[in-house]
Every structure is written in structure tokens, then in C-alpha cells.
Image (cartoon, rainbow, N blue to C red):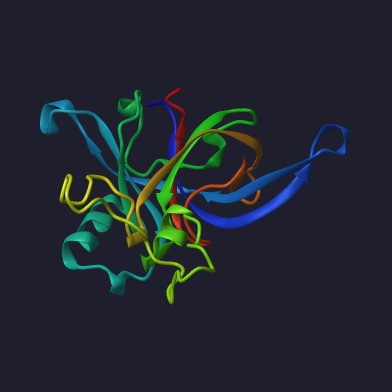
Amino acid sequence: MKKAILGKKLGMTQIFGENDVAIPVTVVQCGPMTVVDLRTVDRNGYSAVVCAFEEIKEGKLNKPEAGLYKKAKAKPARYLREFRYEDADSYTVGSVIDCTMFGEGDMVDVSGVTKGRGFTGVIKRWNHHRLKMTHGTGPVHREVGSTGANSNPSRRIKNLKMPGQYGHENVTIQNLKVVKVDKARGVLLIRGAVPGPKGGLVTVKETVK
């Protein structure tokens, strides 16, 4: 990949484009990331850049993590991620990567962890309809309904949509457009919605399609 950066979802708003058309955008604070280590072909078998994002107090780190930042002469950070940039050899320890990596009009993929909703029923999880409200149906009207025939096949069908854990999973939204790059605030305005809650960690990278 050529472009990728860690960011924090700040929320949604709208801006006005040509002919005063409202454009819904998600505000993502991207970077700055600090390069704290490098992966090389000779030592690791591949090339990559290890980046740190979001400063925290040193007391929140364990000794190995603190040693990594001390060796790189960088401030402690909450997140560490590897990025296999095509030009990884051009980076050095201490380099700073910010939102200017992207430009207006770039198409990106945004990955994040969706909101966790716990154990939910089929209506919330799969958008099923309620059962009939009349003719003896009930007393529960939000239940699954039939899960299969008794005599044949005498078992529950595979991949049947059932209640269960919903949310808190990695999701990638593809082909989103960068509407604006605000270097002063360090944010990207990305058209559309991206996964995760406000304050959630997201990864913005060039689109694969």
C-alpha cells in the first residue's frame, strides 16, 4: 500500500459543496503518527513501518513498551501499528506522518470496530419483522418463529438467522471519498459514515478497488 494512517472518529457533520449541495461527512482526526521502529527484509523478512498514535502518560506503559519509545526517543503512545508501505525504506525512526498524506478527491477504505450491542434478538440483529399481533400469536411477538420442520430434516438448518452477539466486530467501508483535508486541525472530512463510535480508532487507507 502507498497510503495508510491511524485516526480517531470525532463525529459527523455536513459541509456545502458546489451549488450549495449538502455533503454528509465524517470528521476523522488523522495522525500525527510517529515512526518508532522499522521492519527490514534482512532482519524480519519483510519491509514495514511501526507507527505510534495518540500520546499518553508514560506510567500507563509496561517496561518493554517504555523501552521501545525510549530507544526511538519518542513520546509514549496508546496505539502501535505496522504499515507495509511500498516506500517503507524511505522512512526513518522519528519521522512524522500526518493527514497531508491524503489529498482532496482521494478514494479510501476505512476500517474500525463497530459499536457493541451485546446479545440481541432477530429484529435488531437481522431486521426481521414481528410476528402477527392477532389470532393467538404470542404472548411474545418478537421471537424467532419457526426454525425448521420436525420430520424432515429434523434439525436446524445451517446459517439460520438467530439471536446472538451483535456488533463489536471489524468492519471496512470501501470507496469513500476524501472531501477535504484540514492540515491546521489535522483532520480529514470523509464523505459518508465510517464504523465505530465517537472516539473510536479507525484506519484510513487507499482503496483496493
